[in-house]
Image (cartoon, rainbow, N blue to C red; front, side, top):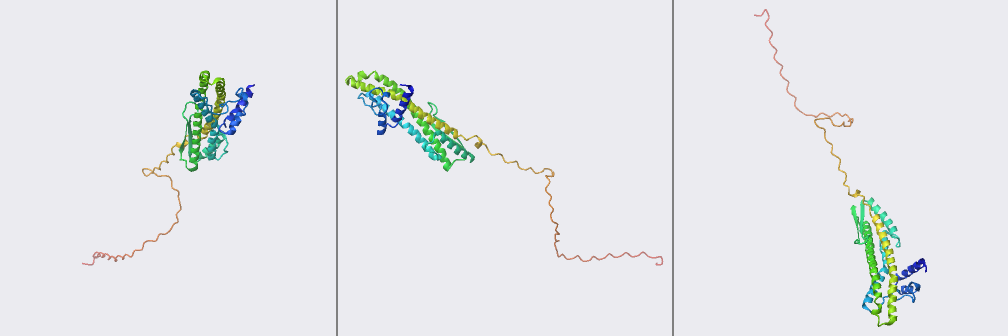
Length: 308
């Protein structure tokens, strides 16, 4: 069988596995081509069911595998629901991709910036080993009403995506642990089930083999969801970055006051205006006139020659 043909069949199988918790999903898995699981068709594990072997060590393995199957099967829908919740706040298509939602967020963030609200989102958890977190800080004016709801919705969506990424990465590590454990248990089948006879041993080995067949598919689906979630967060981080530093600049200082002229120096020429000439009435005062002064007595004439 060609590698391409096997890949197509594997993809169709895991699509069925993602709905394994419903009767329809179980039927879809059961109808998967039997060559994917070898002769005899899929085992209980291959059908998405919990297999019970009767041995505690083996059952611990099968329980852990089943719980991981359930968690990973829900993850694509869980990631989609995160985007749908954000789409409601952005008034976008419920099935929009993370990239399209980020474009709507970018438009809204720029509207806030034009109203004096700068945004910056810092995230952690895109890389392996970092704690998942997302925080949007604002500068300038404080957002209120719909603006605040928008900021909170983007932060909530980014944080939910990052937490999902962290869980799926943990799930992938668990897959690797279970893969190694299945190889070790395979060597213990004869001793653990010697009383069960060949049929029981064959049944247990079949479930172990089908578990190892499923594990790469489970890991591949986890990678798809991780990549979708990381893309959404990175695009939102870019959109929510309108703080260019201008919102924190202090206001310009007021102009200096005008200095009056010193030492009687003439200041700037004042504009000349022709005022209309009006005769001001003189104030009337009823003061008594002073009495006329007595004229001075004229001097006596000098004596003439004929007078004694």
